[in-house]
Image (cartoon, rainbow, N blue to C red; front, side, top):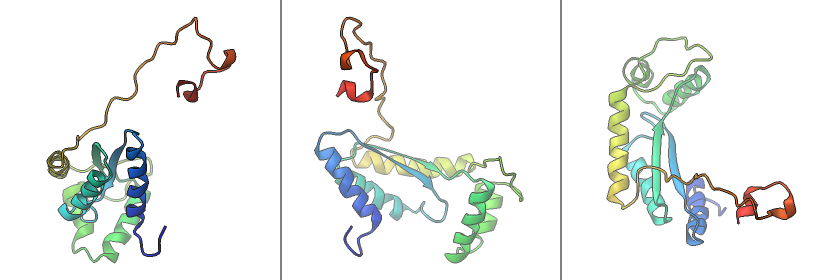
Length: 160
């Protein structure tokens, strides 16, 4: 990586090499963090990079909180000086009370999730991409009369 090059930029350069070679690629923007990575400009930057890299499929999901993740998010919200961020997470966006149980996942409320994902979908569609992933996993019937790999175990590379 060149000095000063953002890691995401390098990642999209690699993705472009794959799409230029005919590999079907998709990007899942996950997790989207409320107040941190959910801004229109942040999402647009990722979508533009997907488009410029030839990615036809883009999807996204919002952060699910666990107790360990919540502790890190609180630190980030404080470091970024996001006013009332912790209270907004607890009372509005995720609607939970502390302490979170170690095995419990909290999801964002439906209206917030719907608003963010609808915005993301609109931007994806405006760029001529698809807001979903293709069904690339299909059952494939093996010809029982054909011997693959000299009768050895069949692997993914057997199909290439």
